[in-house]
Length: 109
Image (cartoon, rainbow, N blue to C red):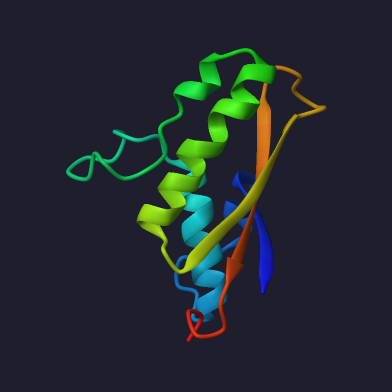
């Protein structure tokens, strides 16, 4: 089944979630909000966010590969399907992105 996840979804998800699909969605949201190198003793975890310092049109294309690779590495139960980036209308200098993932029924068990 396909789902969409964004960094905003992290506030709606619980850390003690018992539903496996919600756990996977939470993990993807955590990946999207964690800058690589920011977790002590686990420096490889997270997303290389060097694309954030680029102009919006460059950042949109430069973000796809790091996001896909981070999801593949840190949450292999979620298959990256695509990503959309946009400018947050309430904050024009801030990019917001939404990731489309697929979770197979067997992975959610």
